[in-house]
Image (cartoon, rainbow over all chains, first blue to last red; front, side, top):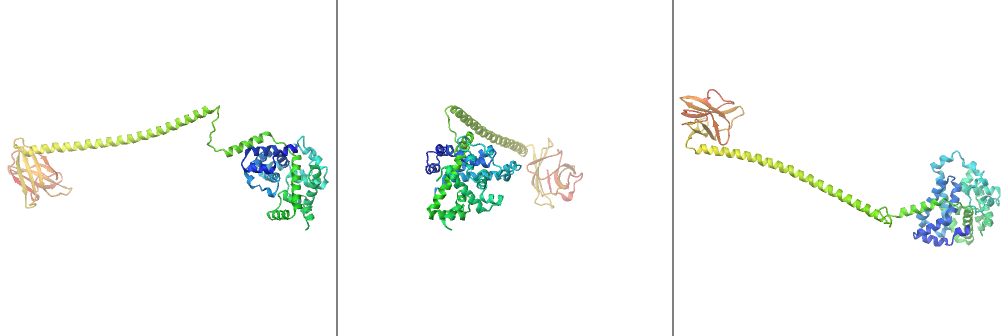
Length: 185
Length: 260
């Protein structure tokens, strides 16, 4: 999936076309990136309708704010992912979601992420569980909180009492350990 | 801090996650600009997050894309733009014609309503003017009748004129009597008499067989005044009496007198 999905059009070229208000470029962007973005959103927001709403908002933002993307500061996908993450977190903290979440305390959930909770996975994608197998317990907790609840590292430090510096190094170690599985580097 | 420690602190992961403050971001970007290995490491971290996202991708409902593209289309399409489509083109023209007809009819209705209101107002004004003219005409006609009548009296040989001159009370006073001895008709023409108060009136007397006889009361007016019929008068005189007249003349107030 990753090869076909990440597409033939290079990100630089795609950015140029988006900045030129080319709607076919947006369509292409959606076809190739929506699943990766939606995965990130839906891991933070459990409600499918709300998650889809955030996905649409995110792509509206990509279209409207493409001028503010600066290629020299990072990859297009990083910009897209962070924007989607921020939208998701904002949505999560908005009143409408808070109500439904009250009975479902976040901090209790974070440590109970089991493979059966990791629903919606694509058939072709490797299970998150398999990915996480490569991580030590302490690293996995941090990755789960970042990935599944949209926590910032500072929030993880506050929530768990683990010093921020330790949270950061653990996330770094976790990502480094995942590189070989992900085929990075 | 050496490069190795800087990288292992996890600050670059925070940078890629967008969790740094503006100052920290500038610091990382400065470091990346100066140290190619930091730039390369950032690229690896971005790549890791990207690969991880694709590995854990979730296919959204197909309807989301439709809604997204429709929303963008809607946002960028001017609201009034009507794209004629071949299958419903005639409907659009029909609708356009209907609207045109409705708008035209409304404008015409409004215009004619206004015209009608204006016409109605003009008609009302003309009717009022007409009534005024008719009224004026009647007044003029009546005055003409009176003048004709007065002229007939004055010019008729049947009437004899008696000039009454001012007494010592009012030396400048002057009035005339036109008297038809056979029909006994008496007309008074005031030339010059003084103004009276509201409580007073002039009274005309005819002297018959040495006795004053009431010939009617009058106020200052133009033209001939028809007085009471008198037979066999030797003289006429005017006195000032209380309003309504007196049975006997107040001789001391006599204004004018004249013998037949």
